[in-house]
Image (cartoon, rainbow, N blue to C red):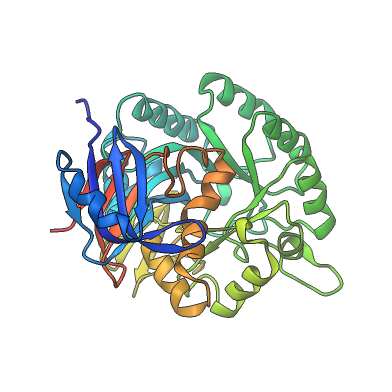
Length: 396
């Protein structure tokens, strides 16, 4: 199946740009944003473009499509299923929630299971993707701390295996975009250094690292922290720990799960106060239960109970991913912080694009960039999502 790019114009919409929101029109041609027109010229430009289908934005918002660098699944499917059917289910669901690009995130699992996901994602990306795009893979583990497994299966925890990473990068070039590891483990620094040379993000997570160990990792190239506060050594005034390093080292971008379950609103505001504005990234950490009713699910082979939207392991009661979506993360942030929508948009799109090295083509609304866009009404309810100008979701 060939998925053609569309040409169209949307007018009467509040365009969420990188530093402001302006009412106007956006023209899309050949899958890219060709023109942004604001002010008095917007309506006349819309009228002049008679050969293009015209969408009335109805006074809603047009935002850059969301980029989720940490997501395990949704609508009953998991990336560890390693199947096109599951990938379609996940990317279709999250596209309905405004996500236009994501990293297929794995769990701590056997080498064979991880390789199955890598192969399946590589094959999926080799043909046109019908919904949200998979930009690559985020390996969450298996090189993590036994002390902080969270919802990861401790049976598969490994010390860092640089030869695995070299093998996988050789077999599937440019597929792995992020690795989460515990930087205190033997072999981590060598692994981080090699990954940095390949342009692959390394993130600390599920870690018991003390402050100096995280700083040494950042010196080697570590550039991110997964689900900040969760599954990491916390802050102490005499040993700042993993969290202290993440909050104070501007080289490290901090992921946040803004669902009111994983992180208290005051702790979110602390991250926003401590970090540069381009070093905070909203993620979902969504599991298969996202978009589904309460019940029992599986994550990494472990049983998870979801009750009132909160996912916890059946054994041990640890938080097990989330049921969050990116649009709900933005709504939560609007309620609990004083950030304007244009800054929250950067947290949900632009900052992730910069971390992935793709901000030249996506992550913001600008002429020449891909038309990866989401249109909402005034209450931020999703009306339509486009990937490279092609509609991948439309509310009915």
